[in-house]
Length: 334
Image 1 (cartoon, rainbow, N blue to C red):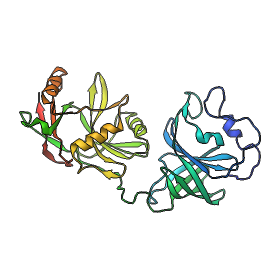
Image 2: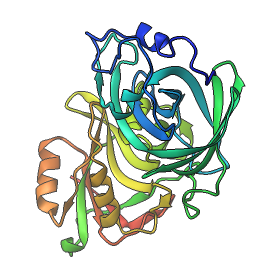
Image 3: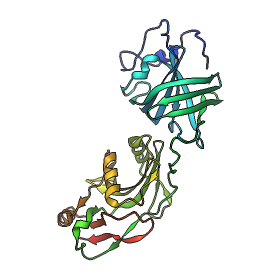
Image 4: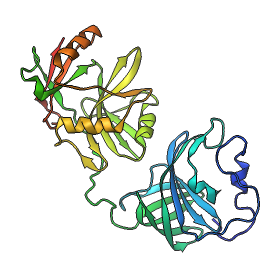
């Protein structure tokens, strides 16, 4: 990776793009602008595969790496960073949709930006101190082979209290009852869809699944990558059910067990559902399932009319009890 101003630093960038077909900035060939070599931007790129583009201003261009799992927040985790072509400085402000059929097609969003200081810059190692709103601290990028580099956080963890995504969680199960609870104001009511239980573990835009016995299992083709892209850089563990809805297999999300480094098992059901709703996870293959505090009769009537097997009553103040069949959840056949 040369740092001297030799040749056309943006020739590869221009060669991959046509200004008439992409909203990206495509400056004409000419002298490079002079800056302070202190701007950085991280862009979330929903291309064929979700990744984050780390760009550092250097000698009139943005030196760039594609980071599939995002910038690590903990020094225990090094992430792959693939060196890509230099980008023009104008790219630091770019957000938009790159059209299908063009290089890098997909949605580009600014995930973080700010200033940085250089501690070392060579063809094989770049040490910087980032000052952004989401990412701050000392980082090193080091070359391993060819265009493959690694990015490592040199400072202590950005959030020392963050806990890792759990390897596996056994799902909580309801007790079966013949009647709905008497004090219905203490419960929320959901549809029982009669599908297959799946827990989703999302990290770095990637998703893995476990089944009702906490065993690793595959999800439907394409679901994991799309759900991971919907959450982006936010790590989460979701509980849900794979069922047929209006003739299509759909992942119906009904609980949130972990988010952004924080386990939520001890939080009451109402709080977990509110956090899940805030994520607005609704896509072509997944939906956040509805929940109805206190509305037992309406939910049971709707379940019958839709041919669903039953209703779930979940106590609003109940924690999530992994692997337990708990009286705080009730399954009532319709």
